[in-house]
Length: 286
Ligand SMILES: NC(=O)c1ccc[n+]([C@@H]2O[C@H](COP(=O)([O-])OP(=O)(O)OC[C@H]3O[C@@H](n4cnc5c(N)ncnc54)[C@H](O)[C@@H]3O)[C@@H](O)[C@H]2O)c1
Image (cartoon, rainbow, N blue to C red; front, top):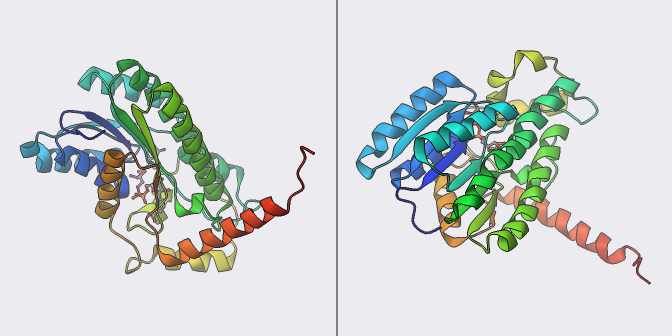
């Protein structure tokens, strides 16, 4: 997709961080943007600011409060988007939350919350929007926000599970789209390292029905408070990531991997170990 002006984008988790930056960049390209988030107050404020800043460029914004973890909420979102703008060209499945803790220490509520937003949210997004994107016949693009933690394990069992899952889903989706839409609908997976955002304040949007928290080991808690420190200087700005997303859509680039050197090193180590293990594994076809 080379031309953005007048096209329609849907961005989940658009009230903050990378989602807000993507929505803002799309609107400044003259797109019609559906900004959606579960945090209503922050969403309305963000949407008003994006609309005001992009008016001269022809950007239009529709703010829809929605819980990506809820299938009906996502189906309603798709109906609102179609009613307002007619069709959707760019889908950014971006909303996400993190809860630290080892797989066996996380509570069932920890697991359900993180899986609900980071994995089911993406599934709901694909189910609600992709059939319409295929049916209208125009160019489009699907971007899913995973993480460097989708390519190398992080300290959180649930976060790792969801972020690895959406990398695999995106790889499968890219192959399917290449066949199904003859390349008309592109696919990207965004796996950033550290980005300045409110991700370490995810609990602000945790549903009351999933409030039971699992154990976090003291050493993990210490790492977490360092990660959440407001004066960190090792993270990139969300606007920088949004620029990479726009470039990737234009260039039909699948992997978007902006990350700090230590993530790169860990990913290389994992891939080397995997490659050696594949080589050493017995062949089972004789
Ligand atoms: N910040 C980082 O360092 C980093 C690194 C890698 C990946 N990510 C991923 O980037 C994505 C965006 O996160 P961010 O870093 O901008 O954090 P953020 O907290 O600033 O933004 C996430 C947004 O998602 C929204 N959200 C949470 N639960 C939701 C729900 N149930 N339905 C709809 N919206 C919901 C939040 O209200 C928030 O506005 C997430 O998927 C996250 O996992 C972040």
